[in-house]
Image (cartoon, rainbow, N blue to C red):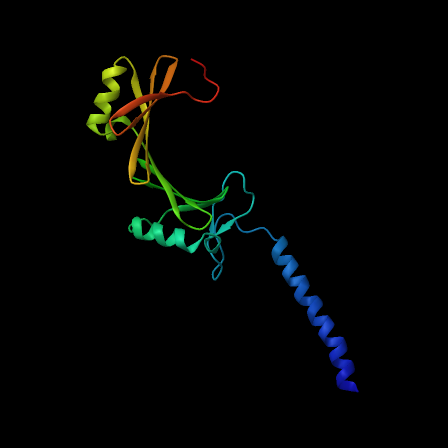
Length: 179
């Protein structure tokens, strides 16, 4: 009889203590400057997300693809974005962004750089048409084994975005800009 009463009192007390510990862990804020020893590394979050992203929150297929494709990169930052994941890192003066879907499948890669890194033939093609314009920045988008260059040019207050793909060139109109 004593064993039944003792387990009837002790079991609910243990369950209450476990629930209190679990709820305090859920409600506690992670340390933004680093993680304590033994805890997973807390990674930066996307602008729309208010919660920390743990490495375990990234689909393993995305992490494996990233490590296989970019083997020397150790300082990448992972983000949870709408319908997937994003990795960012910097290689010299080139910023890179790699996006994956929610299942960890690679979608596209974007390299951001200045005019001096732009391939000569693409630069020549843009400058031969818009020779008075200065190239301010370039986005090199790799998707489906195809390279697309988005070249940002300007002359004074007049800004344009030029798309170059497979030798064809066209002007991209930013949202809200009318001809």
